[in-house]
Every structure is written in structure tokens, then in C-alpha cells.
Image (cartoon, rainbow, N blue to C red; front, side, top):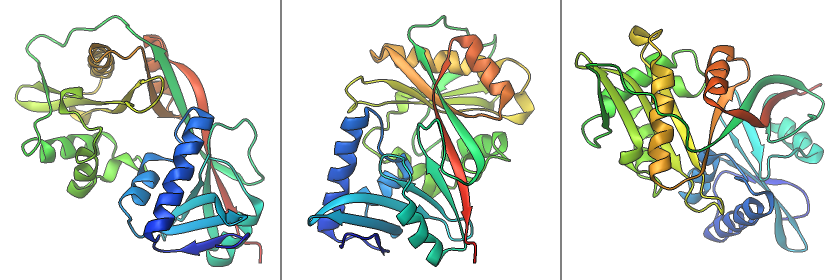
Length: 280
């Protein structure tokens, strides 16, 4: 590695350790994740990707991961922006979408998406499940296909959540943080109507919870089940001893935001996706 940005499709074992060390130190410094969970997993598991590295005085000083070929998307460790890296990336790609995390002003470019992290203190009032409905926890090796069908239908038009495959689910359920007791399923008339998958950030100093995925089947929307499932998910997190929780929502999803705000969530952070294109 040199003082300029260099890319590789595969990290050596030493590079993986250096990147993970940089990510961990950045986590601690920022008090939040240094990079998106999916991107961190690519480093942890050594998956092929377009890894960008920069060193200073012989030590790793910067890292970014670019994913996707049709619509390349990049994120730097720390969630910032680097003009030199952008120049190098646009030599290889005619267009790139860049995640900037927890920012108030973005680099020059076209903002194509905004995610808001919403926060809440626990406990909150718990809303009972409807009469006749059955609330239970996810059963590995039994519920995968039913949940994928329900979740993908609920997120049919979402750029990330609406096209999960068995391998996507397996990757997450095989992670050390996965706990099926925090993965709630609601059945009505024998059908999977809604779900709420929660996560505890055990290694974070504040040990907070997260509403990881919440969805309602299109056939059961309009019955207040989203509110029920978020409430039940927060209750499940509280039982694990966490005092606060977060979730991520599209800034444009006005209906979902109104629901979360009515429960007590507030906006704690905004992440933006900025599009850049080669000029010549």
C-alpha cells in the first residue's frame, strides 16, 4: 500500500486484520459503527469485493468498500468523503453512489437517498396482539421460506429489503449476534401476517437494541400490526436489559415515520447517498 488509494478484489490476511483494527478503532472514536454491517461482514469473512486502502507512514490510514457492478456503491470507514478517492473510483466506474454517514452537509453531488436513524428510550407501553393472533419466535430450519415470502412481499419496492434470498438470511442468522428469541412472528388464521426482528448491539459500550427488520404482509396492512410489532419488539429488547433502541427508515417514508414518532422515536442521525458521475 502507498500514500495514494489502491484497490484490490481480495484482502490478504494481514490486510484484513489491519482493516478490522481500523474499523474497531473508528467505532470507538465515533461511538457508532464505522461502516455498514454488510460491508463489515465482507471484511470479516474475506468475501470478494472492491476494497480501497490508503496508508500513511506504512500504516493503514483509510479504507473503503465498493459493492455492486450495475449500480456501484461505496462507503468509507467512518462514513466520510474523500475527493482523492472519488477521483480514483471514477477512473474505474462511470458512476458511483457514495454513502455519507451522520452528516449535515454533503459533498457536491446528487443526493439520491436519505436514511434516518430514529432513537427511543425504553421502556414504552406495550400493545397487545389482536385477539386470535399468535405471537411466537422464529424457528431456525423451519420458518426461513415463510418469512422470506412475507418480508419480500412487504418490501417489494425497497432497494435492499425486497429481494432477500435464503443465503442472505443464512448469512445473518449465522452471525454471533443472532438470537431467535428476539425474532418475532405474528400469525393470523395460520398465515404469517407480520414480523419484527430485533438485535442487541452487545459489543457497543451503551449496549443498545435495534429494530432490525419490521414488516407487515400486504394482505394484512391497515390493521395497526406495524405498531403492534414495533411495540412487541421493543418489549423483547427491554427484557434483555437494554435501555434504548434505534431503527432506520427512509426519509421519504412519511407513513412509517409518523408511526415511529407516535410511539416515541426521534431522529438521531441522517445518512445520505450521493451520486457522482464521470465528467469526461
